[in-house]
Image 1 (tube, rainbow, N blue to C red):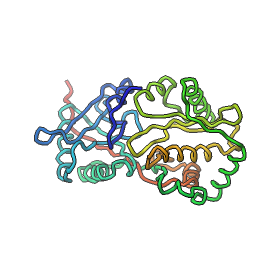
Image 2 (image 1 turned 45 degrees about the vertical axis):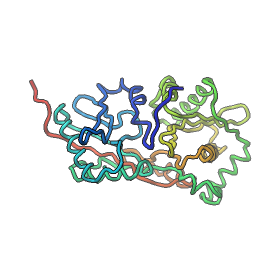
Image 3 (image 1 turned 120 degrees about the horizontal axis):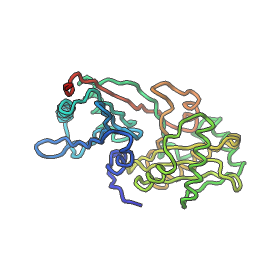
Image 4 (image 1 turned 90 degrees about the vertical axis):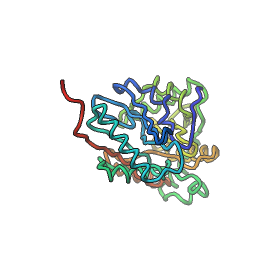
Length: 309
């Protein structure tokens, strides 16, 4: 596996990850914001015509702090520098999707305040769900809701198996399970098998299978996004096996894995689309012990641009 430099921040802002998805945009803008010749903030945008997006092919992105002890006024000066650069290259709109608050919360919460005060607005606010592992893992079955507890016991009686994918063939098998799940539910699967295999060479990650006898019936792809937070990118079971309560089983097994690895959070992702809740998914994630946080998409339109010729 190629080594990816990791910090307290997110793997989604690493150049190696962005380069995997460069064909999705016209160009990638890697930006550093300086103070007195010293780099203080970094952000990556994808550009399409006169619009910039951060992220352009990831769950979230934001302006990471490169040096500590930045004041709120430093953030404001950085935003002004960013807008000056946008003006110089003819940008008419910029968008940023911030992570849930348990990722680098002091920095992201400050940015949300600063951007709002500079005229950026929330396009929508998603509800995100995740496990705070140290809080939920102890005496897990007594902390989850009655239906989830009952479903977990059904899964145990079904004698399901769980394992990490060790070979490319197993990873392909896990991808096929996820593909069947998305197809059966009518959900898009944005990553091809080839893209998944490329990504897991760059992003610290693992794939997992749930089995019933010899048959693989559920799977998950999990990225280690920061040193303390992992994220479920995809999970699901194949049609015809929901009675085994495979996702209740899978979620608990993943919790145990990432608790043993020393992670504090397992991010399950949003259950909203453009801010509108999928109530069934929200209820399910509530039932298995997830916490709710918000995930904000902010944008600003700029009147100036490169004059037409």
